[in-house]
Image (spheres, rainbow, N blue to C red):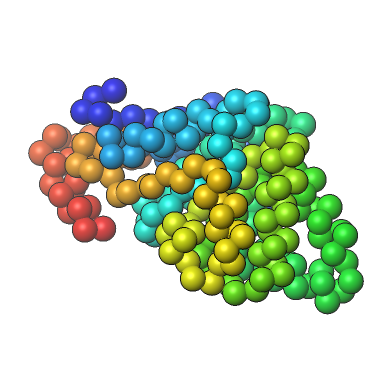
Length: 223
Protein backbone atom coordinates (compact mmCIF):
# COMPACT_ATOMS: atom_id res chain seq x y z
CA UNK A 1 0.00 0.00 0.00
CA UNK A 2 1.43 3.36 -1.09
CA UNK A 3 0.14 6.63 0.38
CA UNK A 4 -2.72 4.65 1.93
CA UNK A 5 -3.93 3.66 -1.56
CA UNK A 6 -5.38 0.18 -1.88
CA UNK A 7 -6.76 -1.91 -4.70
CA UNK A 8 -9.43 -4.62 -4.71
CA UNK A 9 -8.72 -6.64 -7.82
CA UNK A 10 -11.51 -8.20 -9.87
CA UNK A 11 -9.03 -9.57 -12.42
CA UNK A 12 -8.33 -13.21 -13.22
CA UNK A 13 -12.03 -13.89 -12.94
CA UNK A 14 -14.31 -15.58 -15.41
CA UNK A 15 -17.59 -13.78 -16.16
CA UNK A 16 -20.29 -14.47 -13.59
CA UNK A 17 -22.47 -17.07 -15.22
CA UNK A 18 -25.75 -16.41 -13.46
CA UNK A 19 -25.59 -12.68 -12.88
CA UNK A 20 -28.25 -10.75 -14.76
CA UNK A 21 -27.76 -7.21 -16.06
CA UNK A 22 -24.03 -7.62 -15.54
CA UNK A 23 -22.73 -6.41 -18.91
CA UNK A 24 -21.79 -3.03 -17.49
CA UNK A 25 -18.91 -4.62 -15.60
CA UNK A 26 -17.59 -6.29 -18.77
CA UNK A 27 -17.37 -2.92 -20.51
CA UNK A 28 -15.51 -1.25 -17.66
CA UNK A 29 -11.93 -0.18 -18.19
CA UNK A 30 -10.76 -0.99 -14.68
CA UNK A 31 -11.06 -4.51 -13.34
CA UNK A 32 -10.32 -3.31 -9.83
CA UNK A 33 -11.47 -0.76 -7.28
CA UNK A 34 -8.83 1.73 -6.23
CA UNK A 35 -9.40 3.65 -3.02
CA UNK A 36 -7.56 5.47 -0.28
CA UNK A 37 -7.67 6.00 3.47
CA UNK A 38 -11.03 7.76 3.46
CA UNK A 39 -12.55 4.65 1.87
CA UNK A 40 -10.59 2.14 3.93
CA UNK A 41 -13.73 0.52 5.40
CA UNK A 42 -14.51 -0.76 1.91
CA UNK A 43 -11.75 -3.34 2.29
CA UNK A 44 -13.46 -4.80 5.35
CA UNK A 45 -16.79 -4.77 3.52
CA UNK A 46 -15.26 -6.62 0.58
CA UNK A 47 -13.77 -9.27 2.85
CA UNK A 48 -17.10 -9.66 4.67
CA UNK A 49 -18.86 -10.78 1.48
CA UNK A 50 -16.32 -13.51 0.81
CA UNK A 51 -16.94 -15.55 3.95
CA UNK A 52 -19.69 -18.02 4.83
CA UNK A 53 -21.99 -17.00 6.33
CA UNK A 54 -21.57 -13.34 5.32
CA UNK A 55 -20.61 -11.02 8.14
CA UNK A 56 -22.90 -8.17 7.14
CA UNK A 57 -26.23 -8.58 5.41
CA UNK A 58 -27.59 -6.23 4.29
CA UNK A 59 -24.36 -4.54 3.22
CA UNK A 60 -25.05 -1.03 1.97
CA UNK A 61 -22.75 1.24 0.00
CA UNK A 62 -23.88 4.85 -0.07
CA UNK A 63 -22.51 7.99 -1.67
CA UNK A 64 -23.07 10.41 -4.54
CA UNK A 65 -23.27 9.40 -8.17
CA UNK A 66 -19.94 8.78 -9.88
CA UNK A 67 -17.81 7.57 -6.96
CA UNK A 68 -17.73 3.94 -8.13
CA UNK A 69 -20.44 2.25 -6.05
CA UNK A 70 -21.85 0.17 -8.91
CA UNK A 71 -18.39 -0.68 -10.26
CA UNK A 72 -17.42 -1.85 -6.77
CA UNK A 73 -20.60 -3.85 -6.21
CA UNK A 74 -20.45 -5.64 -9.57
CA UNK A 75 -16.80 -6.48 -9.01
CA UNK A 76 -17.55 -7.92 -5.57
CA UNK A 77 -20.37 -9.95 -7.09
CA UNK A 78 -17.86 -11.42 -9.54
CA UNK A 79 -15.63 -12.40 -6.64
CA UNK A 80 -18.59 -13.90 -4.78
CA UNK A 81 -19.70 -15.82 -7.87
CA UNK A 82 -16.28 -17.37 -8.28
CA UNK A 83 -16.52 -18.68 -4.71
CA UNK A 84 -20.13 -19.84 -5.20
CA UNK A 85 -20.28 -21.23 -8.76
CA UNK A 86 -23.46 -23.18 -8.03
CA UNK A 87 -25.36 -20.23 -6.59
CA UNK A 88 -27.23 -17.52 -8.44
CA UNK A 89 -26.86 -13.78 -8.02
CA UNK A 90 -29.70 -11.44 -8.92
CA UNK A 91 -29.11 -7.81 -9.87
CA UNK A 92 -31.88 -5.25 -10.04
CA UNK A 93 -32.57 -1.65 -9.05
CA UNK A 94 -35.25 0.16 -7.12
CA UNK A 95 -37.32 1.10 -10.14
CA UNK A 96 -37.11 -2.28 -11.89
CA UNK A 97 -37.90 -4.18 -8.70
CA UNK A 98 -41.07 -2.18 -8.12
CA UNK A 99 -42.11 -2.52 -11.76
CA UNK A 100 -41.60 -6.30 -11.66
CA UNK A 101 -43.59 -6.52 -8.43
CA UNK A 102 -46.50 -4.55 -9.85
CA UNK A 103 -46.56 -6.64 -13.03
CA UNK A 104 -46.53 -9.86 -11.01
CA UNK A 105 -49.30 -8.55 -8.75
CA UNK A 106 -51.48 -7.52 -11.69
CA UNK A 107 -50.92 -10.89 -13.36
CA UNK A 108 -51.66 -12.83 -10.15
CA UNK A 109 -48.11 -14.23 -10.37
CA UNK A 110 -46.70 -13.21 -7.00
CA UNK A 111 -45.59 -16.76 -6.21
CA UNK A 112 -43.47 -16.87 -9.37
CA UNK A 113 -42.06 -13.44 -8.55
CA UNK A 114 -41.10 -14.56 -5.05
CA UNK A 115 -39.49 -17.73 -6.36
CA UNK A 116 -37.38 -15.73 -8.81
CA UNK A 117 -36.35 -13.10 -6.30
CA UNK A 118 -35.70 -15.32 -3.30
CA UNK A 119 -34.10 -18.39 -4.87
CA UNK A 120 -30.68 -16.75 -4.99
CA UNK A 121 -27.51 -16.71 -2.97
CA UNK A 122 -26.91 -13.01 -3.45
CA UNK A 123 -29.43 -10.21 -4.05
CA UNK A 124 -28.13 -6.84 -5.25
CA UNK A 125 -30.39 -3.79 -5.35
CA UNK A 126 -28.82 -0.80 -7.07
CA UNK A 127 -30.18 2.74 -6.70
CA UNK A 128 -32.23 2.27 -3.54
CA UNK A 129 -33.24 5.91 -3.86
CA UNK A 130 -35.26 4.99 -6.98
CA UNK A 131 -37.59 2.83 -4.92
CA UNK A 132 -40.94 4.65 -5.07
CA UNK A 133 -43.36 5.11 -2.22
CA UNK A 134 -45.08 1.75 -2.58
CA UNK A 135 -45.54 0.16 0.82
CA UNK A 136 -46.51 -3.31 -0.40
CA UNK A 137 -43.47 -3.53 -2.68
CA UNK A 138 -41.22 -2.40 0.15
CA UNK A 139 -42.71 -4.97 2.52
CA UNK A 140 -42.04 -7.60 -0.15
CA UNK A 141 -38.45 -6.41 -0.43
CA UNK A 142 -38.02 -6.68 3.33
CA UNK A 143 -39.37 -10.23 3.20
CA UNK A 144 -36.73 -11.09 0.60
CA UNK A 145 -34.02 -9.80 2.93
CA UNK A 146 -35.41 -11.89 5.80
CA UNK A 147 -35.54 -15.01 3.63
CA UNK A 148 -31.94 -14.61 2.51
CA UNK A 149 -30.77 -13.99 6.06
CA UNK A 150 -32.38 -17.25 7.19
CA UNK A 151 -30.50 -19.08 4.43
CA UNK A 152 -27.24 -17.20 5.10
CA UNK A 153 -27.47 -15.37 1.78
CA UNK A 154 -25.97 -11.99 0.98
CA UNK A 155 -27.97 -8.79 0.44
CA UNK A 156 -26.04 -5.95 -1.19
CA UNK A 157 -27.51 -2.46 -1.59
CA UNK A 158 -26.32 0.73 -3.31
CA UNK A 159 -27.83 4.10 -2.49
CA UNK A 160 -27.07 7.78 -2.85
CA UNK A 161 -28.08 8.33 0.78
CA UNK A 162 -28.56 6.46 4.02
CA UNK A 163 -31.99 4.77 4.19
CA UNK A 164 -33.12 7.09 7.00
CA UNK A 165 -32.59 10.04 4.66
CA UNK A 166 -34.93 8.64 1.99
CA UNK A 167 -38.41 9.82 3.02
CA UNK A 168 -40.30 7.46 0.71
CA UNK A 169 -39.03 4.35 2.51
CA UNK A 170 -41.36 2.75 5.04
CA UNK A 171 -40.05 2.53 8.58
CA UNK A 172 -39.79 -1.25 8.63
CA UNK A 173 -37.52 -1.30 5.59
CA UNK A 174 -35.35 1.48 7.01
CA UNK A 175 -34.97 -0.43 10.27
CA UNK A 176 -34.15 -3.65 8.41
CA UNK A 177 -31.47 -1.97 6.32
CA UNK A 178 -29.86 -0.45 9.40
CA UNK A 179 -29.49 -3.94 10.87
CA UNK A 180 -26.57 -4.45 8.49
CA UNK A 181 -23.45 -2.43 7.71
CA UNK A 182 -23.54 0.91 5.88
CA UNK A 183 -20.28 1.96 4.21
CA UNK A 184 -19.81 5.41 2.76
CA UNK A 185 -18.09 5.60 -0.63
CA UNK A 186 -16.48 8.97 -1.31
CA UNK A 187 -14.68 10.43 -4.30
CA UNK A 188 -11.02 9.35 -4.47
CA UNK A 189 -8.41 11.64 -2.99
CA UNK A 190 -5.29 12.87 -4.83
CA UNK A 191 -3.21 9.73 -4.29
CA UNK A 192 -6.03 7.44 -5.40
CA UNK A 193 -6.74 9.62 -8.45
CA UNK A 194 -3.10 9.35 -9.48
CA UNK A 195 -3.20 5.58 -9.02
CA UNK A 196 -6.37 5.31 -11.12
CA UNK A 197 -4.88 7.45 -13.89
CA UNK A 198 -1.65 5.48 -13.82
CA UNK A 199 -3.58 2.22 -14.13
CA UNK A 200 -5.70 3.56 -17.00
CA UNK A 201 -2.56 4.70 -18.78
CA UNK A 202 -1.12 1.19 -18.44
CA UNK A 203 -4.31 -0.35 -19.83
CA UNK A 204 -4.15 1.90 -22.89
CA UNK A 205 -0.40 1.55 -23.36
CA UNK A 206 0.35 5.19 -22.55
CA UNK A 207 3.31 6.65 -20.71
CA UNK A 208 2.58 9.62 -18.48
CA UNK A 209 5.20 11.63 -16.63
CA UNK A 210 4.60 12.25 -12.95
CA UNK A 211 3.89 15.92 -13.63
CA UNK A 212 1.25 14.98 -16.21
CA UNK A 213 -0.36 12.63 -13.69
CA UNK A 214 -0.42 15.43 -11.13
CA UNK A 215 -2.05 17.84 -13.58
CA UNK A 216 -4.67 15.31 -14.66
CA UNK A 217 -5.41 14.34 -11.05
CA UNK A 218 -5.94 18.01 -10.21
CA UNK A 219 -8.31 18.36 -13.18
CA UNK A 220 -10.37 15.47 -11.84
CA UNK A 221 -10.83 17.10 -8.43
CA UNK A 222 -14.20 18.57 -9.35
CA UNK A 223 -15.28 15.73 -11.63
